Image (cartoon, rainbow, N blue to C red; front, side, top):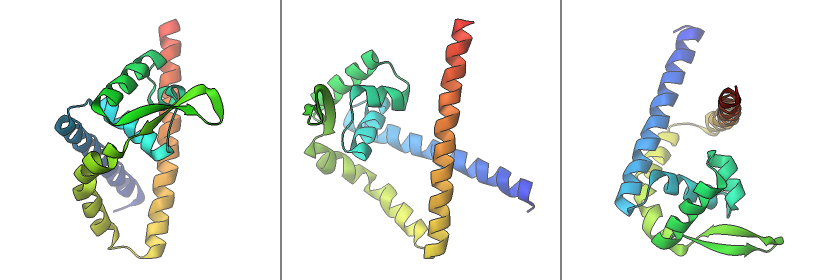
Length: 158
């Protein structure tokens, strides 16, 4: 394959991996009886060790009002709780509850094991390259999402 063919094939596989991740998350959400948005917001909370409603709104593009509903549903399901922010008592942090580790994490174990088996094929240099590639690609995806949202907002205003 030449470079263009490689890049096309890589983009296709990245789309397939991303899509499969969404499908897997939807299956987990259905098993738990929560929505996909709730599960993705909860993952943002877990990855950050806690998040404010504003953090979640910025990460997802949802309004703070919509995020309030998401947090309410996560609390009712027993997967999140609101706590005062120790750095700024005016703010509230959303934190994951222990139920995330006991009820949700096991549902991701098959995916984690499959990923670990796939990564085991690569030496440390290759893993470092993959990490750099995925980190760079993630940052590019965030920028593209922000640009799309900004364009959508400006199109509405036009």
